[in-house]
Image (cartoon, rainbow, N blue to C red; front, side, top):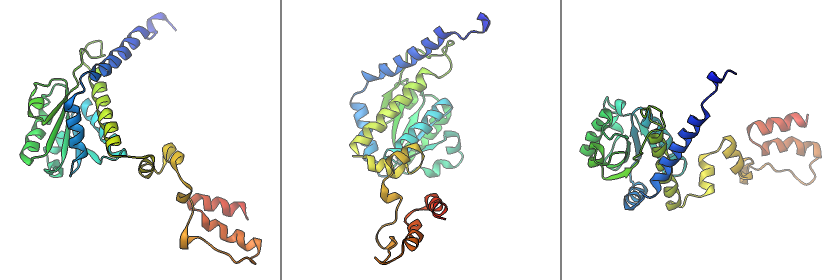
Length: 244
């Protein structure tokens, strides 16, 4: 490969270092405001709604998914769709987490107006605590970064990574405060590699009155004919094929 086409590994390393530093910079900023946000989310009597525009919106989807999968029901609300009718999802018992690095995203600010009118609680993740979003929120979590990882210092990179990490910190702290256990995680992840690793025998077999029974004098051939009913779905089909 010609040297002119060789990727700039130095730049790639700088990107990773910049984003790592953005996360490390959050550690010393965790204070009572973070604790207040955790309590608000834990005590929420409605739903947790996460909203943000553009790249922040993508981070919002991940934060909502992580909260939902660890015992805190949450969903993403697109701010542009919200001001075209989806505001009907909001209730005064909800807690809204709004992400905007600038704190001045127009679509988000329009949603914030409605949130305050409805009376829902607002937690802001922003890089500018004195922004309109920061001054309007009930609790502000500072996600300020010194620079983006973008060589032009324009594309949201370090700032979105910081917001994502702080969202994970909220979700994991909530997980512990709720007493969320491995068994709870298994119920919410019944499929995929996580689900298989947490699956228990009772999830595969019938029990109680549904358990097939045979008399002691039943012939082995007839016993084998009853055994497929111990299993659900594909496992039963495999057993039938194996005993033909």
